[in-house]
Image (cartoon, rainbow, N blue to C red; front, side, top):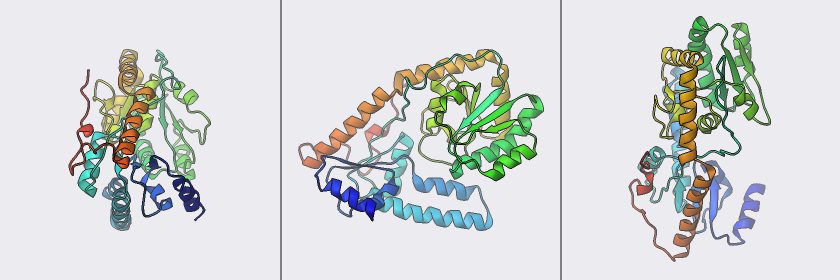
Length: 328
């Protein structure tokens, strides 16, 4: 109630544009929104729960499926209240239009602060794999469980000196205990004020996610700092990365382990992926470019809301902006 009152007080000041972040914030908003209203949705939220359901059986499957259905109803009803819904990838834009019959879904690229995440050249001797992500996220927990149980035994069979650093808040005690009981060279940092020193101490970034939606910033943060990335398809979904050229693709345990081992061994390959990744980010995904995209979307919402400009692409199909830009 306090949150609703605070938001309503701001809306009463007649902002030229209202931007909500994540559909969950919709519970704080009144039923009738200003004409220039924008929802910045970072995922297709129901899809996350659907993917959890697909990985489970029995009672767990039934629970995840029920939660997914509830989220589909909530997400659809919330997004349809807004004049514009921002998607973070072309794939998400198409999915949101198809799922919820939305009229205007502009796309914004995922970006990274290239001044904050400074590039460092790979070290010649490599031993450390890193993962970054909050461990109170069920998607991240599932990925780390997959890495720990299915992938890492295959890594240490070939590289017994390999080390894993998991950067992120609230690691489950049972997961930490499992790694310790197995005698693995794993370190869980817990909450850190700055992930950069931990990324800088790593040699390869692992993104073993099997569940999720939207896009993952962890991929771009690692690439910005010169870390080659080994990822599942879900881990880099929506980012438009080219497998083999900009990251190592691995969707099963054997391929994932082999890719990690190869990169730990191959200094030249690590350097190639590091340089290619950083060059891609500088060309297309720096915050200056992303900021201009967001500004354009907000100005368009203001213009359409005030009636000074007719909406473009307001058709019940994927907008033209949802197409991937050409690669150069």
